[in-house]
Image 1 (cartoon, helix red, strand yellow):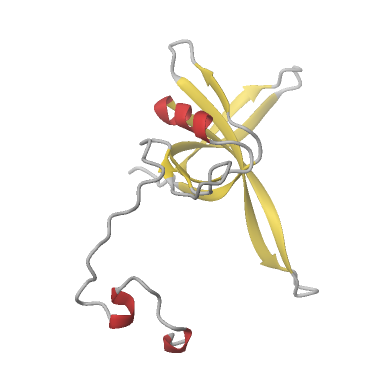
Image 2 (cartoon, rainbow, N blue to C red):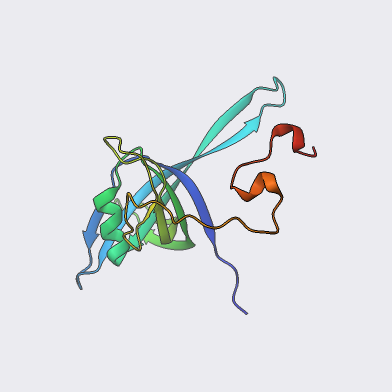
Length: 159
Protein backbone atom coordinates (compact mmCIF):
# COMPACT_ATOMS: atom_id res chain seq x y z
CA UNK A 1 0.00 0.00 0.00
CA UNK A 2 1.34 3.43 -0.92
CA UNK A 3 1.80 6.04 1.78
CA UNK A 4 0.51 9.59 1.56
CA UNK A 5 3.17 12.19 0.79
CA UNK A 6 1.49 15.52 0.00
CA UNK A 7 2.50 19.07 0.92
CA UNK A 8 0.62 22.32 0.28
CA UNK A 9 2.38 25.56 1.21
CA UNK A 10 1.62 29.25 0.70
CA UNK A 11 4.48 31.67 1.23
CA UNK A 12 6.83 34.25 -0.26
CA UNK A 13 10.04 33.70 -2.20
CA UNK A 14 13.11 34.59 -0.14
CA UNK A 15 15.33 34.95 -3.22
CA UNK A 16 15.11 34.88 -6.99
CA UNK A 17 14.60 31.46 -8.63
CA UNK A 18 17.70 29.57 -9.76
CA UNK A 19 17.32 27.82 -13.13
CA UNK A 20 19.71 25.19 -14.44
CA UNK A 21 19.42 22.17 -16.70
CA UNK A 22 20.46 18.55 -16.51
CA UNK A 23 22.82 16.94 -19.01
CA UNK A 24 19.80 15.73 -20.95
CA UNK A 25 18.39 19.27 -21.17
CA UNK A 26 15.66 18.99 -18.52
CA UNK A 27 15.06 22.34 -16.79
CA UNK A 28 15.37 22.35 -13.00
CA UNK A 29 14.40 25.41 -10.96
CA UNK A 30 14.91 25.82 -7.22
CA UNK A 31 13.20 28.37 -5.03
CA UNK A 32 13.04 28.95 -1.29
CA UNK A 33 9.82 30.11 0.31
CA UNK A 34 9.11 31.51 3.74
CA UNK A 35 5.90 30.35 5.40
CA UNK A 36 4.85 32.11 8.60
CA UNK A 37 3.27 30.30 11.52
CA UNK A 38 1.35 32.42 13.96
CA UNK A 39 1.08 31.49 17.61
CA UNK A 40 0.18 33.10 20.89
CA UNK A 41 2.92 33.45 23.50
CA UNK A 42 1.79 31.80 26.70
CA UNK A 43 3.35 34.30 29.10
CA UNK A 44 2.20 37.53 27.41
CA UNK A 45 -0.72 36.47 25.23
CA UNK A 46 0.91 38.37 22.36
CA UNK A 47 0.68 36.94 18.84
CA UNK A 48 4.05 36.28 17.19
CA UNK A 49 4.93 35.11 13.70
CA UNK A 50 7.56 32.41 13.29
CA UNK A 51 8.91 31.90 9.77
CA UNK A 52 9.71 28.47 8.34
CA UNK A 53 11.82 28.13 5.21
CA UNK A 54 11.35 25.44 2.57
CA UNK A 55 13.39 24.57 -0.51
CA UNK A 56 11.20 23.76 -3.52
CA UNK A 57 12.29 22.19 -6.82
CA UNK A 58 10.30 22.27 -10.07
CA UNK A 59 11.12 20.44 -13.30
CA UNK A 60 10.49 20.84 -17.04
CA UNK A 61 8.17 23.53 -18.40
CA UNK A 62 7.02 24.33 -14.88
CA UNK A 63 10.63 25.13 -13.93
CA UNK A 64 10.95 27.44 -16.94
CA UNK A 65 7.75 29.31 -16.00
CA UNK A 66 8.76 29.66 -12.36
CA UNK A 67 12.12 31.13 -13.37
CA UNK A 68 10.52 33.43 -15.93
CA UNK A 69 7.64 34.87 -13.89
CA UNK A 70 8.70 34.76 -10.24
CA UNK A 71 11.09 36.92 -8.24
CA UNK A 72 12.10 37.49 -4.64
CA UNK A 73 9.14 38.54 -2.49
CA UNK A 74 6.48 37.07 -4.78
CA UNK A 75 3.71 35.08 -3.07
CA UNK A 76 3.11 31.53 -4.32
CA UNK A 77 1.16 28.40 -3.47
CA UNK A 78 3.04 25.13 -3.91
CA UNK A 79 1.47 21.69 -4.13
CA UNK A 80 3.95 18.85 -4.09
CA UNK A 81 5.63 16.06 -2.16
CA UNK A 82 8.53 15.74 0.24
CA UNK A 83 11.79 14.21 -0.94
CA UNK A 84 14.64 13.15 1.36
CA UNK A 85 18.23 12.88 0.12
CA UNK A 86 21.68 12.35 1.51
CA UNK A 87 24.93 13.77 0.17
CA UNK A 88 28.60 14.07 1.08
CA UNK A 89 29.68 17.49 2.39
CA UNK A 90 32.00 19.35 0.02
CA UNK A 91 34.56 19.84 2.78
CA UNK A 92 34.69 16.09 3.42
CA UNK A 93 33.30 16.41 6.94
CA UNK A 94 30.69 13.69 6.46
CA UNK A 95 27.25 13.02 5.17
CA UNK A 96 24.46 15.55 5.20
CA UNK A 97 20.71 15.11 4.85
CA UNK A 98 18.07 17.37 3.39
CA UNK A 99 14.34 17.38 2.82
CA UNK A 100 12.90 19.42 -0.02
CA UNK A 101 9.54 19.86 -1.70
CA UNK A 102 9.22 18.53 -5.25
CA UNK A 103 6.58 20.75 -6.85
CA UNK A 104 3.71 19.24 -8.79
CA UNK A 105 2.11 22.68 -9.14
CA UNK A 106 3.21 26.24 -8.41
CA UNK A 107 0.48 28.89 -8.41
CA UNK A 108 1.39 32.57 -8.66
CA UNK A 109 -0.98 34.23 -6.20
CA UNK A 110 0.49 37.66 -5.49
CA UNK A 111 0.44 40.63 -7.86
CA UNK A 112 3.12 40.81 -10.52
CA UNK A 113 5.90 43.36 -10.18
CA UNK A 114 4.97 46.76 -11.54
CA UNK A 115 1.33 46.54 -10.42
CA UNK A 116 -1.29 45.63 -12.94
CA UNK A 117 -3.53 43.61 -10.68
CA UNK A 118 -3.30 40.04 -9.96
CA UNK A 119 -4.64 36.89 -11.23
CA UNK A 120 -3.23 33.58 -10.52
CA UNK A 121 -1.33 31.89 -13.24
CA UNK A 122 -0.27 28.30 -12.94
CA UNK A 123 3.37 27.54 -13.54
CA UNK A 124 2.40 24.22 -15.00
CA UNK A 125 -0.15 25.59 -17.43
CA UNK A 126 0.80 29.09 -18.46
CA UNK A 127 -2.61 30.66 -18.01
CA UNK A 128 -3.86 34.01 -19.25
CA UNK A 129 -2.83 36.62 -16.70
CA UNK A 130 -5.57 39.14 -17.28
CA UNK A 131 -8.54 37.03 -18.34
CA UNK A 132 -11.60 37.48 -16.15
CA UNK A 133 -13.28 34.38 -14.84
CA UNK A 134 -16.50 33.39 -16.57
CA UNK A 135 -19.60 34.47 -14.69
CA UNK A 136 -21.68 31.62 -13.36
CA UNK A 137 -25.42 31.48 -12.88
CA UNK A 138 -26.63 31.66 -9.27
CA UNK A 139 -27.45 28.24 -7.90
CA UNK A 140 -31.15 27.77 -7.19
CA UNK A 141 -30.56 25.86 -3.95
CA UNK A 142 -28.51 28.60 -2.26
CA UNK A 143 -30.03 31.12 0.17
CA UNK A 144 -30.76 34.50 -1.44
CA UNK A 145 -27.91 36.32 0.34
CA UNK A 146 -25.39 33.83 -1.14
CA UNK A 147 -26.88 33.34 -4.60
CA UNK A 148 -25.14 36.42 -6.01
CA UNK A 149 -21.76 35.33 -4.68
CA UNK A 150 -21.80 37.85 -1.83
CA UNK A 151 -21.19 36.89 1.75
CA UNK A 152 -23.88 36.96 4.39
CA UNK A 153 -24.01 39.96 6.69
CA UNK A 154 -22.22 39.50 10.00
CA UNK A 155 -25.59 39.54 11.80
CA UNK A 156 -26.62 36.37 9.94
CA UNK A 157 -23.61 34.27 10.99
CA UNK A 158 -24.74 31.71 13.61
CA UNK A 159 -21.66 31.93 15.84
